[in-house]
Image 1 (cartoon, helix red, strand yellow):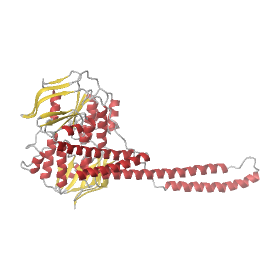
Image 2: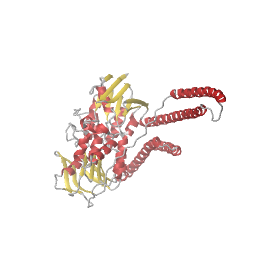
Image 3: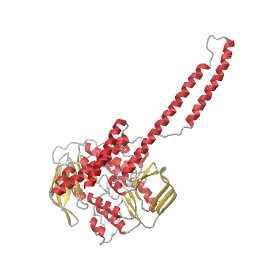
Image 4: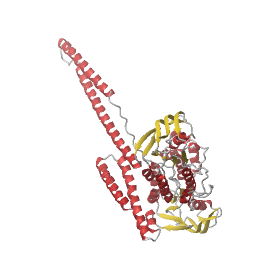
Length: 550
């Protein structure tokens, strides 16, 4: 049974054709992952489908029995006695003081309570802690209805989807299977297209060379040799004319063959994003930020007790814990400067990325927002913005018209290009496409700035951070090491540690598998590509063994 459809749809933003879709169907039993880079129109497509945005052309249909989990904050009311509410530890009432993750959980519970035949979810894992993502995954697996999900979480898409729909250049391409299947099919298609293009270029060059050779031959014989008598020359000239005509006919025939060759477009190069975080003014001390004997509250609720924390220069710290434990509140407590228990050196300048992008002004353009806090000239700002896909006239877009992922990119650019020496980033990967996440990861690894990072993305944290602070049971627990070190030492139960080690090793294998898939798509050397293929197969076998033993 069909639950939704779109046909002959066109949607413009200004003079840009954002979406040009001939046909898209949602059928009963579908579990669709909608993917694509930020700003390609994923959320717009969903909002057209549910009637929040009107298309310029085309038709759409959606069943009355659907629920929508929005990526933007939305007030909602849920059943106070619901089972899911208890499982996700959802608060009783929607409140502005709730964490981003708690607000997302309320929207998720609301969607499941409606018992619809179709759930449409726009980045449902954003702001959720690791355990909540696992639970949501189980909830969606048990859900008997149809799913349409926008997500950048590769593991999430792998576990849930039986179909991947990619938006690229306004068009839809449908791939059967999960996210890994989509990557494999996309890579195979790229290889086929590249092979066909090379074959086309080779054949065209061969025919063009044949034309050039025949033109040279024609030019050589059209004149009688020097020293030849008039009578003889006349005879030969007549023969030359016949030879010339034959060659001209051959040339026309070859040109016709070129014209009838099936045109093959050159496959687009996979462009990598590069984010540069420029060196900042050095801090002449080991401890630029210190908190002593603090208690942190939200309203009258104690979130964190007995806070004694020293932020060492050059540390790359991950602040982790369950939704609502106080991670964002701790960052804001430090930044506010309202407590005499927080000591911040006078030359410390903090660049803060708010998960709600509260530092952005919707009524101003992208360029205006960046220039407000940046000392860099406009040329340098434009170069930085271009890496995030904001080129030429797009820098004059109003921030209020941007997608969730585009807003995050602008917010990150604003922080990166401001004058600071300590970065506090609260869920910076939310709504970002995978290429942008990898670019940001690389930039943070290579910067000399002190970083305090809140993120639910385990891979992101594992690759960047060398120090873990966990908020648990209203206390700060510090681990002088990366995420693997934290997993090994967070509790004393040997069985649990061994289990976590196994899970962590499995995660490493899966992350490497994703990297290999990406490397294969970029590699042009056939020998190296063959080596990568062997490693890919070996990783699949190892993952299978781990899954069978856990």
